[in-house]
Image 1 (spheres, rainbow, N blue to C red):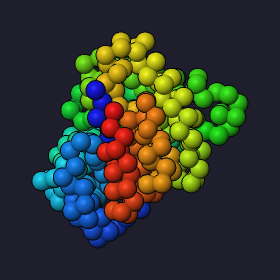
Image 2: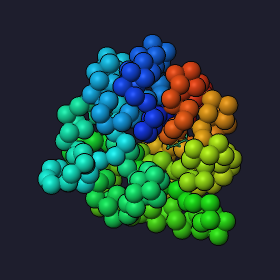
Image 3: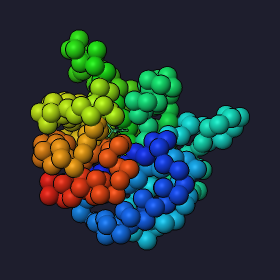
Image 4: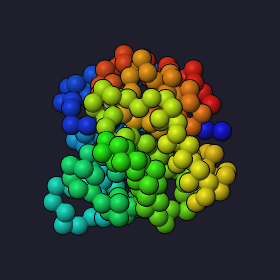
Length: 255
Ligand code: PEP
């Protein structure tokens, strides 16, 4: 039985004061929610203060990225042990902006996934096709390849700590959402692939979030789909009211 999981990706959007204010509001509004798993992912520099503020409530904290090495001469990078040190439970890996803006490869993302798991961090492993790939009917092959390479070397046991996020690139930050059926089709495909890779039990327990312009207005219909197990939310996670709206939709869509 999967518990829905809603995570907010704050990207590089809020300053320190705004981050603390938003975290405080979320603590008040949804800090007691336990039937849906919740996380926020602030910028690195605010992780510690947000994690401290949320420490007594049910909202966990994740980072938006990490390096694959534990330490070393990697100027400007942040390592997994540092994320644990400041109170992170999760780390988003393979976000489309990391892939397409910063040129991260499937191999590099896989190294990070393996490192995160070995350290006890829970990765949210993202993938999704671009508009031109969708138009060229390549969605299936693109997301399948991303899933297989992202999870290479991950054991069935470790999958209990892995969340998958399907995020069509054309829907991220564009206001253009996949229809519930478009999302469900890809989620069902990913779940079938997980069954091939890990067997039916692991597959049935793996949370597959949808991400791409999720808002309170469309969250319920997306999460009503049988294989859509929550949301990875960018823009709508920056306001407490809209993030709460998505969380409430998840609560009523429990699977
Ligand atoms: C994201 O950043 O992962 C995302 C889905 O953004 P948005 O909700 O703004 O499309």
